[in-house]
Length: 148
Image (cartoon, rainbow, N blue to C red; front, top):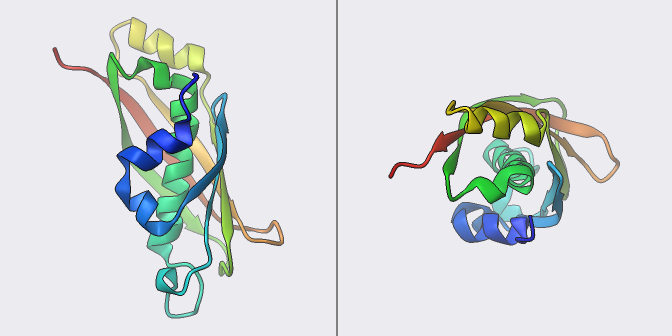
């Protein structure tokens, strides 16, 4: 896909912009984005609030998904259907989320071509500056066929 997926996501999801999320990479079913270390995003223990971490991870998952199947937006609407999050360690400072689509593009498109509504997972790890995983998330996405 030739579109800048990070820019598209930030344009269509204003809350991600509000948090200051930036994208390092999005392509081939993978995406990396980061959340700045800002006091207004902190929780009661001076780390990023759980909601900010969730939004970062969901943004990485959406960008990973769009980088693989974003060319299908004229015929289907992507929707997150479920998410499972594990907060593993106190996050401090800037954090980076890395998302990767677990299904292949071909599998997802085949389901859509067959007239079905594909569902697929995107796994995301959030790491701190030392590279330790502080949170992991799995988002299940679907492509709802566009209504005429």
